Picture 1 (cartoon, rainbow, N blue to C red):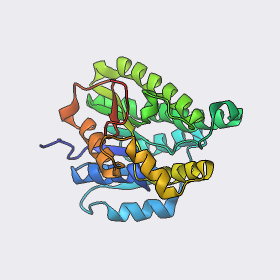
Picture 2 (cartoon, rainbow, N blue to C red; picture 1 turned 135 degrees about the vertical axis):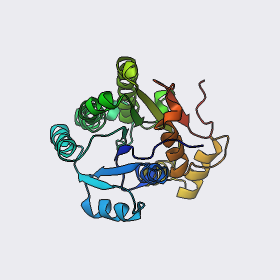
Picture 3 (tube, rainbow, N blue to C red; picture 1 turned 90 degrees about the vertical axis):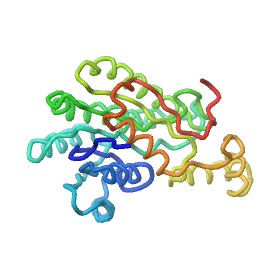
Picture 4 (cartoon, one colour; picture 1 turned 135 degrees about the horizontal axis):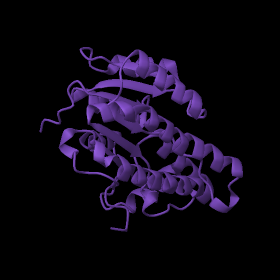
Amino acid sequence: MDLKLNNKYALVCGSTAGIGKATALALAEEGANITLIARNEDKLKAVLAELPKHRNHDYIVADFSNPMELKEKVESYIKNNHGFHVLVNNTGGPAGGPVFDAKIEEFESAFTQHLKCNHVLAQAVVPFMKAEEFGRIINVISTSVKQPLDGLGVSNTIRGAVANWSKTLANELGQFGITVNNVLPGATGTERLTEIIKNKSAKTGKTEEESANAMKSAVPAKRFAKPEELAAAITFLASEKASYINGINLPVDGGRTKSL
C-alpha cells in the first residue's frame, strides 16, 4: 500500500526512544522528512544518524516542561525552514501511584507536559496544514482513556483531558483536511514499561519476571507490544489513506481493554 508520505514533513515528539523513535523511523521509511524533537541533543543526533540519508531530516532541542519556549522554538524553526504536514504528540507518562496520594504539583507538571505542549504545538503547525489542505495530528496517549489503569492516578486524569481536547480539535479542524486522532498504547516494550514493572514488583513482593508475566496474562495476545507495532498504526493514520478517519481513540493493546 502506498501511503503517499513522500515529501511530507513530520514533527515527531519524544523521538529519541520507544514509540517516538519507532514512529520517526517508520514515517521516514514511507518517504516522510522527519524533524525529531526532544530535550537530549546527543540522543537526537544518534537517532538522526539512523534515518535514511536521502531525506531532509533534522531535529529540534526542546524541553516539554516549558510550553512557551517549546512553541517559540518550533515557530522559529517553521519560519526559517518549513512547516509540517504531520504532528505526532508523544511525551513520557507521569510517575505511578494512587490518585488520592498525588500532589497538586504532579497534576500541574503532567498537564503542562501533555495538554499544554500538545496545544501549543498544534497552534504552531496548523496554519501550514490549512494552507496545504492536509494535516495529521496524532496524539500518543494511553488505553486509560477508555479504562482507567490501577496505580496510574495522575496519568489516568491527564490522559482523559488530552483525549477530550483532541476530540474537540478534530471537530474544529476537519473542514480543513486536517484530522486529529489518538493512538492508545497498551503495555509496550519501552523504558516506561520497565519502570511500571519495577514499581509493581516493589509493591507486591513479586519478582519483576512474575510481575511482567501477570501483566501479560491480562492481554489476550499474551505478550507486550513492540514499539514498531504502535508506529505502524501511527504511520497509517498519518497517511492520505486515513483521510476519513478523524476524532477516534485507537487502542493498540493486543485486546486488553475491556470496553468496546
